[in-house]
Image (tube, rainbow, N blue to C red):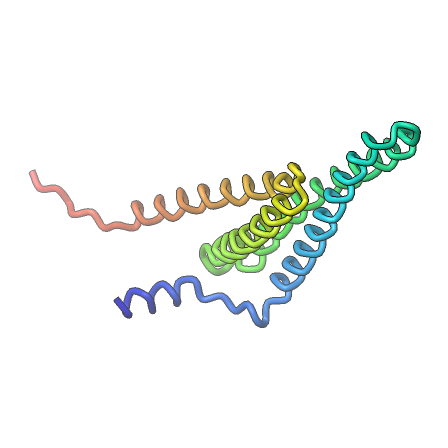
Length: 168
């Protein structure tokens, strides 16, 4: 069993401490998600004020529209940032087989899991529905990348197996 763990560790040996790309991606990802979560909670509070004070509906509607536009932009920016990180990690490790993809998958799954947990907690506290949306498309990109990685690794494994020649 320790031999298997050692092989697995060597297979996914990624130096996170010296990797500036990972640090920059995670910093930017968490900051943008924190801003997104703040804007969604603010938008939810404005919606409640919009319904509570009908005489100021135009003011609250304008603010809600601006916040919705900003959150839509941030959704798209998070998706673009995720795809760019995938491409940069693949380009960085182009000479090492699957290392960039494995790094991307590990970082993405860990960061998405942590954001999902925080979003779920805030969803329960503030009773806002849309806190789970920002990472939905990023999660889909990560799942597609993991499926492609599994297919590529499986194909490589099947093609690399030495077949015994058949005798007639």
